[in-house]
Amino acid sequence: MGYILLLIVAAIVVWAIAAYNSLVRLRNEIDGSWRQIDVQLKRRHDLIPNLIEAVKGYLQYERDTLNQVVEARAKALNASDQGARIAAENQLSSGIGRLLAIMENYPQLKADENVLRLQEELTTTENQIAFARQAYNDVVLSLNTRIQTFPSNLIAGNFGFHSAEYFKAAAEDQAVPKVDLAVGARAQQ
Amino acid sequence: MTAVSDFRALEAANRRETAVLVVAMIAILAALGFGLDVWAGSIRITDGSLSGFPLLTVFALIFGSVQALISFYGGARLVLLSVHARPLTPDTIQHQRVLDAVNEMAVAARMPPPRAYLMDDPAPNAFATGRDPAHSVICVTQGLVDTMDREELQGVIGHEMSHIRDYDIRTMMMVAVMVGGIAMLSDFCFRMMFYSGGSGRRSSNDKNNGGGAIILVYIATLILAAVAPIIAQLVAMAISRQREYLADASSIEFTRNPHALLRALEQIAKSESPLKAATSGTGHLFIVNPREGAREDRERFFDNLLSTHPPLTKRIARLRAMLGAPGQATAVPQS
Image 1 (spheres, chains in turn purple, cyan):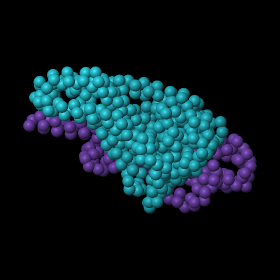
Image 2 (cartoon, chains in turn red, brown; image 1 turned 90 degrees about the vertical axis):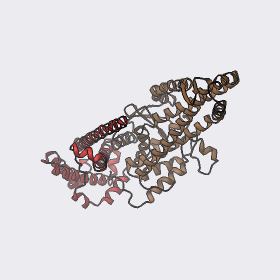
Image 3 (cartoon, each protein chain N blue to C red; image 1 turned 180 degrees about the vertical axis):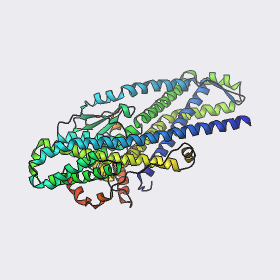
Protein backbone atom coordinates (compact mmCIF):
# COMPACT_ATOMS: atom_id res chain seq x y z
CA MET A 1 0.00 0.00 0.00
CA GLY A 2 2.83 2.32 0.88
CA TYR A 3 4.44 1.79 -2.51
CA ILE A 4 1.32 2.78 -4.41
CA LEU A 5 1.01 5.98 -2.42
CA LEU A 6 4.66 6.80 -3.10
CA LEU A 7 4.13 6.16 -6.81
CA ILE A 8 1.12 8.47 -6.90
CA VAL A 9 2.98 11.24 -5.12
CA ALA A 10 5.95 10.81 -7.44
CA ALA A 11 3.67 10.98 -10.49
CA ILE A 12 2.06 14.18 -9.21
CA VAL A 13 5.44 15.78 -8.60
CA VAL A 14 6.63 14.85 -12.09
CA TRP A 15 3.46 16.27 -13.62
CA ALA A 16 3.77 19.47 -11.57
CA ILE A 17 7.33 20.01 -12.76
CA ALA A 18 6.34 19.41 -16.36
CA ALA A 19 3.39 21.80 -16.08
CA TYR A 20 5.53 24.53 -14.50
CA ASN A 21 8.21 24.16 -17.17
CA SER A 22 5.71 24.35 -20.00
CA LEU A 23 4.25 27.53 -18.51
CA VAL A 24 7.73 29.03 -18.31
CA ARG A 25 8.40 28.02 -21.90
CA LEU A 26 5.16 29.64 -23.07
CA ARG A 27 5.90 32.84 -21.19
CA ASN A 28 9.34 33.00 -22.80
CA GLU A 29 7.85 32.31 -26.20
CA ILE A 30 5.57 35.28 -25.72
CA ASP A 31 8.58 37.49 -25.00
CA GLY A 32 10.32 36.06 -28.06
CA SER A 33 7.26 36.62 -30.25
CA TRP A 34 6.94 40.20 -29.05
CA ARG A 35 10.58 40.83 -29.85
CA GLN A 36 10.02 39.32 -33.32
CA ILE A 37 7.31 41.93 -33.94
CA ASP A 38 9.76 44.60 -32.79
CA VAL A 39 12.47 43.33 -35.14
CA GLN A 40 10.11 43.51 -38.11
CA LEU A 41 8.87 46.98 -37.16
CA LYS A 42 12.45 48.25 -36.97
CA ARG A 43 13.22 46.73 -40.37
CA ARG A 44 10.29 48.65 -41.76
CA HIS A 45 11.57 51.90 -40.24
CA ASP A 46 14.88 51.35 -42.01
CA LEU A 47 13.35 50.50 -45.38
CA ILE A 48 10.98 53.45 -45.68
CA PRO A 49 13.49 56.26 -46.33
CA ASN A 50 14.97 54.28 -49.27
CA LEU A 51 11.58 53.67 -50.82
CA ILE A 52 10.50 57.30 -50.43
CA GLU A 53 13.73 58.43 -52.10
CA ALA A 54 13.29 56.01 -54.98
CA VAL A 55 9.67 56.93 -55.78
CA LYS A 56 9.69 60.66 -54.96
CA GLY A 57 10.53 61.58 -58.52
CA TYR A 58 7.66 59.57 -60.01
CA LEU A 59 5.03 60.48 -57.45
CA GLN A 60 5.21 64.27 -57.54
CA TYR A 61 1.42 64.58 -57.29
CA GLU A 62 1.13 62.19 -54.35
CA ARG A 63 2.93 64.40 -51.83
CA ASP A 64 0.17 63.93 -49.26
CA THR A 65 0.50 60.18 -49.19
CA LEU A 66 4.29 60.32 -49.04
CA ASN A 67 4.21 62.85 -46.20
CA GLN A 68 1.74 60.78 -44.23
CA VAL A 69 4.12 57.85 -44.36
CA VAL A 70 7.11 59.96 -43.33
CA GLU A 71 5.19 61.55 -40.45
CA ALA A 72 3.80 58.26 -39.17
CA ARG A 73 7.31 56.82 -39.20
CA ALA A 74 8.66 59.76 -37.22
CA LYS A 75 5.85 59.40 -34.70
CA ALA A 76 6.56 55.70 -34.29
CA LEU A 77 10.27 56.33 -33.75
CA ASN A 78 9.64 59.03 -31.16
CA ALA A 79 6.68 57.48 -29.37
CA SER A 80 6.93 57.82 -25.61
CA ASP A 81 4.80 54.92 -24.43
CA GLN A 82 3.65 51.56 -25.71
CA GLY A 83 0.12 52.71 -26.54
CA ALA A 84 1.31 55.68 -28.59
CA ARG A 85 3.83 53.49 -30.35
CA ILE A 86 1.28 50.85 -31.33
CA ALA A 87 -1.07 53.55 -32.63
CA ALA A 88 1.75 55.12 -34.68
CA GLU A 89 2.79 51.76 -36.12
CA ASN A 90 -0.77 51.00 -37.16
CA GLN A 91 -0.97 54.40 -38.82
CA LEU A 92 2.26 53.63 -40.60
CA SER A 93 0.82 50.32 -41.85
CA SER A 94 -2.20 52.14 -43.29
CA GLY A 95 0.01 54.77 -44.88
CA ILE A 96 2.24 52.19 -46.50
CA GLY A 97 -0.78 50.25 -47.73
CA ARG A 98 -2.11 53.41 -49.39
CA LEU A 99 1.29 54.17 -50.89
CA LEU A 100 1.70 50.67 -52.35
CA ALA A 101 -1.82 50.84 -53.78
CA ILE A 102 -1.17 54.23 -55.37
CA MET A 103 2.04 52.98 -56.92
CA GLU A 104 -0.14 50.65 -58.99
CA ASN A 105 -1.37 53.64 -60.96
CA TYR A 106 2.11 54.53 -62.20
CA PRO A 107 3.32 51.99 -64.76
CA GLN A 108 6.63 53.85 -65.07
CA LEU A 109 7.45 52.59 -61.60
CA LYS A 110 7.31 48.99 -62.78
CA ALA A 111 10.18 49.61 -65.18
CA ASP A 112 12.43 50.61 -62.33
CA GLU A 113 14.05 47.44 -60.96
CA ASN A 114 15.22 49.23 -57.85
CA VAL A 115 11.71 50.40 -57.03
CA LEU A 116 10.31 46.91 -57.61
CA ARG A 117 12.81 45.35 -55.24
CA LEU A 118 12.14 47.94 -52.57
CA GLN A 119 8.43 47.42 -53.04
CA GLU A 120 8.89 43.66 -52.58
CA GLU A 121 10.98 44.24 -49.44
CA LEU A 122 8.36 46.51 -47.97
CA THR A 123 5.55 44.10 -48.88
CA THR A 124 7.29 41.17 -47.24
CA THR A 125 8.07 43.28 -44.17
CA GLU A 126 4.39 44.20 -43.84
CA ASN A 127 3.50 40.52 -44.18
CA GLN A 128 6.10 39.51 -41.61
CA ILE A 129 4.72 42.10 -39.19
CA ALA A 130 1.24 40.69 -39.70
CA PHE A 131 2.47 37.10 -39.23
CA ALA A 132 4.54 38.10 -36.19
CA ARG A 133 1.41 39.56 -34.62
CA GLN A 134 -0.50 36.41 -35.50
CA ALA A 135 2.24 34.25 -33.98
CA TYR A 136 2.24 36.42 -30.86
CA ASN A 137 -1.54 36.07 -30.48
CA ASP A 138 -1.26 32.30 -31.01
CA VAL A 139 1.20 31.98 -28.13
CA VAL A 140 -0.96 34.26 -25.95
CA LEU A 141 -3.89 31.96 -26.68
CA SER A 142 -1.83 28.92 -25.65
CA LEU A 143 -0.60 30.55 -22.46
CA ASN A 144 -3.99 31.89 -21.43
CA THR A 145 -5.65 28.54 -22.10
CA ARG A 146 -2.97 26.76 -20.09
CA ILE A 147 -3.32 29.23 -17.22
CA GLN A 148 -7.09 28.97 -17.12
CA THR A 149 -7.72 25.26 -17.59
CA PHE A 150 -7.65 22.65 -14.88
CA PRO A 151 -5.30 21.25 -13.60
CA SER A 152 -2.53 23.54 -14.87
CA ASN A 153 -4.35 26.53 -13.36
CA LEU A 154 -3.30 25.23 -9.96
CA ILE A 155 0.37 25.55 -10.87
CA ALA A 156 -0.19 28.85 -12.65
CA GLY A 157 -1.99 30.39 -9.69
CA ASN A 158 0.60 29.30 -7.16
CA PHE A 159 3.61 30.44 -9.13
CA GLY A 160 2.37 33.81 -10.32
CA PHE A 161 1.67 33.25 -14.02
CA HIS A 162 -0.67 35.87 -15.44
CA SER A 163 -2.76 35.89 -18.55
CA ALA A 164 -1.23 37.91 -21.37
CA GLU A 165 -2.84 40.59 -23.51
CA TYR A 166 -3.71 39.99 -27.14
CA PHE A 167 -2.36 42.31 -29.78
CA LYS A 168 -5.36 44.29 -30.98
CA ALA A 169 -5.67 46.57 -33.96
CA ALA A 170 -6.14 50.22 -32.96
CA ALA A 171 -9.63 51.68 -33.37
CA GLU A 172 -8.53 54.10 -36.09
CA ASP A 173 -7.31 51.19 -38.17
CA GLN A 174 -10.89 50.08 -38.70
CA ALA A 175 -11.78 53.38 -40.33
CA VAL A 176 -9.52 52.62 -43.30
CA PRO A 177 -11.47 50.98 -46.14
CA LYS A 178 -9.65 47.66 -46.22
CA VAL A 179 -11.34 46.42 -49.40
CA ASP A 180 -9.53 48.96 -51.59
CA LEU A 181 -6.16 48.21 -50.08
CA ALA A 182 -6.59 44.48 -50.55
CA VAL A 183 -7.54 44.80 -54.19
CA GLY A 184 -4.70 47.18 -54.90
CA ALA A 185 -2.19 45.11 -53.01
CA ARG A 186 -3.20 41.75 -54.53
CA ALA A 187 -2.93 43.18 -58.03
CA GLN A 188 0.64 44.22 -57.49
CA GLN A 189 2.27 40.83 -57.87
CA MET B 1 -14.52 11.81 -42.64
CA THR B 2 -16.79 14.76 -41.86
CA ALA B 3 -16.19 18.20 -43.29
CA VAL B 4 -14.26 19.96 -40.53
CA SER B 5 -14.10 23.69 -40.71
CA ASP B 6 -11.67 24.41 -37.92
CA PHE B 7 -8.01 23.77 -38.74
CA ARG B 8 -7.18 23.18 -35.09
CA ALA B 9 -9.71 20.36 -34.91
CA LEU B 10 -8.30 18.93 -38.14
CA GLU B 11 -4.79 19.04 -36.76
CA ALA B 12 -5.83 17.35 -33.51
CA ALA B 13 -7.70 14.62 -35.40
CA ASN B 14 -4.77 13.98 -37.70
CA ARG B 15 -2.32 13.72 -34.81
CA ARG B 16 -4.59 11.24 -33.02
CA GLU B 17 -4.91 9.06 -36.11
CA THR B 18 -1.15 9.10 -36.62
CA ALA B 19 -0.66 7.97 -33.01
CA VAL B 20 -3.09 5.08 -33.49
CA LEU B 21 -1.29 3.94 -36.64
CA VAL B 22 2.15 4.17 -35.02
CA VAL B 23 0.92 2.12 -32.05
CA ALA B 24 -0.43 -0.49 -34.48
CA MET B 25 2.96 -0.62 -36.15
CA ILE B 26 4.76 -1.09 -32.84
CA ALA B 27 2.30 -3.83 -31.89
CA ILE B 28 2.98 -5.74 -35.12
CA LEU B 29 6.71 -5.43 -34.59
CA ALA B 30 6.47 -6.58 -30.99
CA ALA B 31 4.20 -9.52 -31.82
CA LEU B 32 6.37 -10.75 -34.65
CA GLY B 33 9.53 -10.26 -32.63
CA PHE B 34 8.10 -12.08 -29.66
CA GLY B 35 6.85 -15.01 -31.70
CA LEU B 36 10.16 -15.33 -33.49
CA ASP B 37 12.20 -15.16 -30.33
CA VAL B 38 10.02 -17.88 -28.76
CA TRP B 39 10.53 -20.03 -31.83
CA ALA B 40 14.25 -19.46 -31.86
CA GLY B 41 14.47 -20.17 -28.18
CA SER B 42 15.91 -16.84 -27.14
CA ILE B 43 12.72 -16.38 -25.12
CA ARG B 44 11.46 -19.32 -23.16
CA ILE B 45 8.04 -19.85 -21.64
CA THR B 46 8.41 -21.76 -18.40
CA ASP B 47 5.40 -22.42 -16.22
CA GLY B 48 3.55 -19.45 -17.60
CA SER B 49 6.35 -16.88 -17.11
CA LEU B 50 8.82 -15.50 -19.59
CA SER B 51 12.58 -15.63 -19.45
CA GLY B 52 15.40 -14.88 -21.79
CA PHE B 53 16.18 -11.94 -24.02
CA PRO B 54 14.44 -10.93 -27.27
CA LEU B 55 17.64 -11.23 -29.21
CA LEU B 56 16.27 -11.34 -32.72
CA THR B 57 13.89 -8.41 -32.22
CA VAL B 58 16.66 -6.26 -30.82
CA PHE B 59 19.04 -7.21 -33.60
CA ALA B 60 16.50 -6.34 -36.27
CA LEU B 61 15.81 -2.99 -34.64
CA ILE B 62 19.50 -2.13 -34.33
CA PHE B 63 20.15 -2.97 -37.95
CA GLY B 64 17.23 -0.89 -39.08
CA SER B 65 18.26 1.97 -36.80
CA VAL B 66 21.76 2.12 -38.21
CA GLN B 67 20.33 2.41 -41.72
CA ALA B 68 17.96 5.12 -40.55
CA LEU B 69 20.61 7.10 -38.69
CA ILE B 70 22.82 7.19 -41.75
CA SER B 71 20.03 8.69 -43.81
CA PHE B 72 19.00 10.91 -40.88
CA TYR B 73 22.30 12.72 -40.63
CA GLY B 74 23.37 12.63 -44.25
CA GLY B 75 19.85 12.75 -45.58
CA ALA B 76 19.28 16.36 -46.49
CA ARG B 77 22.55 16.64 -48.40
CA LEU B 78 22.00 13.37 -50.25
CA VAL B 79 18.49 14.30 -51.32
CA LEU B 80 19.61 17.71 -52.55
CA LEU B 81 22.43 16.09 -54.50
CA SER B 82 20.13 13.52 -56.06
CA VAL B 83 17.84 16.20 -57.47
CA HIS B 84 20.72 18.49 -58.48
CA ALA B 85 19.49 21.34 -56.34
CA ARG B 86 21.38 24.58 -55.91
CA PRO B 87 20.90 27.34 -53.31
CA LEU B 88 18.04 29.69 -54.13
CA THR B 89 19.36 33.16 -54.82
CA PRO B 90 17.27 36.28 -55.53
CA ASP B 91 18.15 36.46 -59.24
CA THR B 92 14.77 37.92 -60.12
CA ILE B 93 12.02 39.52 -58.11
CA GLN B 94 10.08 36.28 -58.38
CA HIS B 95 12.94 34.34 -56.77
CA GLN B 96 13.06 37.00 -54.06
CA ARG B 97 9.35 36.50 -53.55
CA VAL B 98 9.90 32.78 -52.87
CA LEU B 99 12.65 33.57 -50.35
CA ASP B 100 10.32 36.09 -48.75
CA ALA B 101 7.54 33.50 -48.54
CA VAL B 102 9.95 31.18 -46.70
CA ASN B 103 10.78 33.94 -44.21
CA GLU B 104 7.12 34.88 -43.78
CA MET B 105 6.06 31.31 -43.08
CA ALA B 106 8.99 30.88 -40.69
CA VAL B 107 7.72 33.87 -38.70
CA ALA B 108 4.18 32.49 -38.69
CA ALA B 109 5.43 29.05 -37.62
CA ARG B 110 7.72 30.47 -34.95
CA MET B 111 10.67 28.59 -36.43
CA PRO B 112 14.07 29.57 -37.82
CA PRO B 113 13.81 29.86 -41.61
CA PRO B 114 15.05 26.75 -43.46
CA ARG B 115 17.72 27.09 -46.14
CA ALA B 116 16.14 27.45 -49.57
CA TYR B 117 17.19 25.49 -52.63
CA LEU B 118 16.10 25.46 -56.26
CA MET B 119 15.56 22.58 -58.70
CA ASP B 120 15.56 23.10 -62.46
CA ASP B 121 12.25 21.54 -63.40
CA PRO B 122 9.23 23.08 -65.11
CA ALA B 123 6.71 21.17 -62.99
CA PRO B 124 5.55 23.17 -59.95
CA ASN B 125 6.50 21.24 -56.82
CA ALA B 126 8.41 21.55 -53.56
CA PHE B 127 9.79 19.41 -50.78
CA ALA B 128 11.25 19.82 -47.32
CA THR B 129 13.77 17.63 -45.56
CA GLY B 130 15.95 17.76 -42.48
CA ARG B 131 16.07 16.17 -39.06
CA ASP B 132 14.84 19.16 -37.04
CA PRO B 133 13.85 22.79 -37.56
CA ALA B 134 17.40 24.01 -37.02
CA HIS B 135 18.80 21.76 -39.76
CA SER B 136 16.07 21.91 -42.32
CA VAL B 137 15.91 22.61 -46.00
CA ILE B 138 13.15 23.57 -48.44
CA CYS B 139 13.60 22.97 -52.14
CA VAL B 140 11.34 24.42 -54.82
CA THR B 141 11.24 23.83 -58.55
CA GLN B 142 11.72 26.52 -61.17
CA GLY B 143 8.16 25.66 -62.21
CA LEU B 144 6.88 26.67 -58.77
CA VAL B 145 8.80 29.94 -58.95
CA ASP B 146 7.36 30.72 -62.39
CA THR B 147 3.71 29.79 -61.95
CA MET B 148 2.67 30.59 -58.39
CA ASP B 149 1.70 33.96 -56.99
CA ARG B 150 2.41 35.23 -53.49
CA GLU B 151 -0.63 33.62 -51.86
CA GLU B 152 -0.04 30.23 -53.46
CA LEU B 153 3.65 30.30 -52.55
CA GLN B 154 2.71 30.91 -48.93
CA GLY B 155 0.32 27.94 -49.05
CA VAL B 156 2.86 25.51 -50.51
CA ILE B 157 5.73 26.67 -48.33
CA GLY B 158 3.48 26.69 -45.27
CA HIS B 159 2.70 23.03 -46.00
CA GLU B 160 6.38 22.16 -46.27
CA MET B 161 7.22 24.18 -43.16
CA SER B 162 4.69 22.22 -41.20
CA HIS B 163 6.41 18.95 -42.13
CA ILE B 164 9.55 20.37 -40.58
CA ARG B 165 7.83 21.75 -37.50
CA ASP B 166 5.97 18.52 -36.78
CA TYR B 167 9.14 16.47 -37.21
CA ASP B 168 7.46 14.48 -39.97
CA ILE B 169 10.76 13.55 -41.52
CA ARG B 170 11.81 12.07 -38.21
CA THR B 171 8.47 10.29 -37.76
CA MET B 172 8.60 8.72 -41.21
CA MET B 173 12.16 7.65 -40.49
CA MET B 174 11.08 5.82 -37.33
CA VAL B 175 8.26 4.25 -39.28
CA ALA B 176 10.78 3.16 -41.94
CA VAL B 177 12.91 1.59 -39.20
CA MET B 178 9.94 -0.42 -37.99
CA VAL B 179 8.97 -1.48 -41.50
CA GLY B 180 12.56 -2.56 -42.08
CA GLY B 181 12.64 -4.37 -38.75
CA ILE B 182 9.44 -6.21 -39.54
CA ALA B 183 10.73 -7.23 -42.95
CA MET B 184 13.92 -8.52 -41.38
CA LEU B 185 12.13 -10.50 -38.69
CA SER B 186 9.85 -12.00 -41.28
CA ASP B 187 12.88 -13.01 -43.26
CA PHE B 188 14.47 -14.63 -40.19
CA CYS B 189 11.28 -16.59 -39.65
CA PHE B 190 11.23 -18.13 -43.10
CA ARG B 191 14.95 -18.85 -43.04
CA MET B 192 14.60 -20.70 -39.75
CA MET B 193 11.68 -22.65 -41.08
CA PHE B 194 13.69 -23.55 -44.11
CA TYR B 195 16.92 -24.56 -42.42
CA SER B 196 15.99 -26.01 -39.07
CA GLY B 197 12.49 -27.21 -39.85
CA GLY B 198 11.51 -25.95 -36.45
CA SER B 199 11.17 -29.38 -34.90
CA GLY B 200 14.57 -29.36 -33.17
CA ARG B 201 13.78 -26.14 -31.34
CA ARG B 202 10.27 -27.09 -30.60
CA SER B 203 11.10 -30.13 -28.53
CA SER B 204 13.35 -28.25 -26.12
CA ASN B 205 10.52 -25.87 -25.37
CA ASP B 206 7.93 -28.60 -25.14
CA LYS B 207 9.71 -30.02 -22.15
CA ASN B 208 9.16 -26.79 -20.26
CA ASN B 209 5.56 -26.05 -21.06
CA GLY B 210 2.53 -27.79 -22.46
CA GLY B 211 3.13 -28.25 -26.19
CA GLY B 212 -0.24 -26.68 -27.03
CA ALA B 213 0.62 -23.06 -26.22
CA ILE B 214 3.92 -23.26 -28.04
CA ILE B 215 2.37 -24.72 -31.17
CA LEU B 216 -0.15 -21.89 -31.21
CA VAL B 217 2.64 -19.35 -30.92
CA TYR B 218 4.49 -21.00 -33.80
CA ILE B 219 1.47 -21.01 -36.07
CA ALA B 220 0.59 -17.43 -35.20
CA THR B 221 4.17 -16.35 -35.84
CA LEU B 222 4.18 -18.06 -39.21
CA ILE B 223 1.00 -16.34 -40.31
CA LEU B 224 2.22 -13.04 -38.97
CA ALA B 225 5.56 -13.42 -40.72
CA ALA B 226 3.75 -13.94 -43.99
CA VAL B 227 1.43 -10.96 -43.75
CA ALA B 228 3.29 -8.54 -41.48
CA PRO B 229 5.55 -7.02 -44.13
CA ILE B 230 2.69 -6.04 -46.40
CA ILE B 231 0.54 -4.86 -43.48
CA ALA B 232 3.45 -2.79 -42.19
CA GLN B 233 3.87 -1.20 -45.59
CA LEU B 234 0.16 -0.37 -45.72
CA VAL B 235 0.25 1.14 -42.24
CA ALA B 236 3.35 3.17 -43.14
CA MET B 237 1.59 4.55 -46.22
CA ALA B 238 -1.48 5.35 -44.14
CA ILE B 239 0.71 7.27 -41.69
CA SER B 240 2.28 9.15 -44.58
CA ARG B 241 -1.15 10.14 -45.90
CA GLN B 242 -2.21 11.31 -42.42
CA ARG B 243 0.86 13.52 -42.20
CA GLU B 244 0.03 15.04 -45.57
CA TYR B 245 -3.48 15.95 -44.40
CA LEU B 246 -1.96 17.36 -41.22
CA ALA B 247 0.50 19.46 -43.22
CA ASP B 248 -2.39 20.81 -45.30
CA ALA B 249 -4.25 21.82 -42.12
CA SER B 250 -1.12 23.35 -40.60
CA SER B 251 -0.55 25.37 -43.73
CA ILE B 252 -3.94 26.95 -42.99
CA GLU B 253 -2.82 27.54 -39.41
CA PHE B 254 0.10 29.60 -40.71
CA THR B 255 -1.58 31.49 -43.54
CA ARG B 256 -5.12 31.63 -42.02
CA ASN B 257 -6.15 31.46 -45.66
CA PRO B 258 -7.48 28.21 -47.16
CA HIS B 259 -7.46 29.86 -50.60
CA ALA B 260 -3.68 29.90 -50.58
CA LEU B 261 -3.05 26.18 -50.57
CA LEU B 262 -6.29 25.43 -52.43
CA ARG B 263 -5.30 27.50 -55.44
CA ALA B 264 -1.78 26.09 -55.38
CA LEU B 265 -3.00 22.48 -55.38
CA GLU B 266 -5.44 23.23 -58.18
CA GLN B 267 -2.59 24.68 -60.21
CA ILE B 268 -0.44 21.63 -59.55
CA ALA B 269 -3.33 19.38 -60.55
CA LYS B 270 -3.58 21.20 -63.85
CA SER B 271 0.13 21.19 -64.62
CA GLU B 272 0.98 19.03 -67.56
CA SER B 273 4.62 18.02 -67.26
CA PRO B 274 5.46 15.44 -64.59
CA LEU B 275 8.49 16.21 -62.49
CA LYS B 276 11.43 14.32 -63.92
CA ALA B 277 14.09 14.58 -61.28
CA ALA B 278 12.36 12.64 -58.51
CA THR B 279 13.50 9.08 -57.91
CA SER B 280 11.75 6.29 -56.06
CA GLY B 281 13.61 7.36 -52.95
CA THR B 282 12.52 10.99 -52.95
CA GLY B 283 9.03 11.00 -54.45
CA HIS B 284 7.25 10.87 -51.08
CA LEU B 285 8.92 14.06 -49.90
CA PHE B 286 7.21 16.37 -52.41
CA ILE B 287 3.97 18.23 -51.77
CA VAL B 288 2.39 16.19 -54.54
CA ASN B 289 4.19 12.91 -55.13
CA PRO B 290 5.39 13.28 -58.72
CA ARG B 291 5.51 9.52 -59.14
CA GLU B 292 1.84 9.24 -58.24
CA GLY B 293 0.75 12.30 -60.08
CA ALA B 294 -2.54 14.04 -59.50
CA ARG B 295 -4.44 10.85 -58.81
CA GLU B 296 -8.18 10.82 -59.03
CA ASP B 297 -10.10 9.60 -56.03
CA ARG B 298 -11.93 6.91 -57.96
CA GLU B 299 -8.81 5.06 -59.03
CA ARG B 300 -8.24 1.50 -58.04
CA PHE B 301 -8.49 0.69 -54.35
CA PHE B 302 -4.95 -0.65 -54.10
CA ASP B 303 -3.50 2.42 -55.76
CA ASN B 304 -4.88 4.46 -52.91
CA LEU B 305 -3.64 2.10 -50.19
CA LEU B 306 -0.06 2.15 -51.40
CA SER B 307 0.20 5.90 -51.98
CA THR B 308 2.26 8.20 -49.84
CA HIS B 309 -0.11 11.11 -50.48
CA PRO B 310 -3.91 11.33 -50.38
CA PRO B 311 -5.59 11.88 -53.75
CA LEU B 312 -5.32 15.49 -54.85
CA THR B 313 -9.08 15.71 -55.30
CA LYS B 314 -9.65 14.72 -51.66
CA ARG B 315 -7.13 17.25 -50.40
CA ILE B 316 -8.77 19.98 -52.47
CA ALA B 317 -12.21 18.92 -51.24
CA ARG B 318 -11.11 19.17 -47.59
CA LEU B 319 -9.77 22.66 -48.16
CA ARG B 320 -12.99 23.69 -49.94
CA ALA B 321 -14.96 22.41 -46.95
CA MET B 322 -12.99 24.77 -44.71
CA LEU B 323 -13.89 27.67 -46.93
CA GLY B 324 -17.58 26.86 -46.89
CA ALA B 325 -17.84 27.10 -43.11
CA PRO B 326 -19.08 30.34 -41.54
CA GLY B 327 -16.93 32.06 -38.97
CA GLN B 328 -13.72 31.10 -40.73
CA ALA B 329 -11.11 33.73 -39.88
CA THR B 330 -10.43 36.06 -42.79
CA ALA B 331 -6.93 36.18 -44.17
CA VAL B 332 -4.39 38.13 -42.14
CA PRO B 333 -4.47 41.66 -43.56
CA GLN B 334 -1.40 41.76 -45.72
CA SER B 335 -0.02 43.78 -48.56
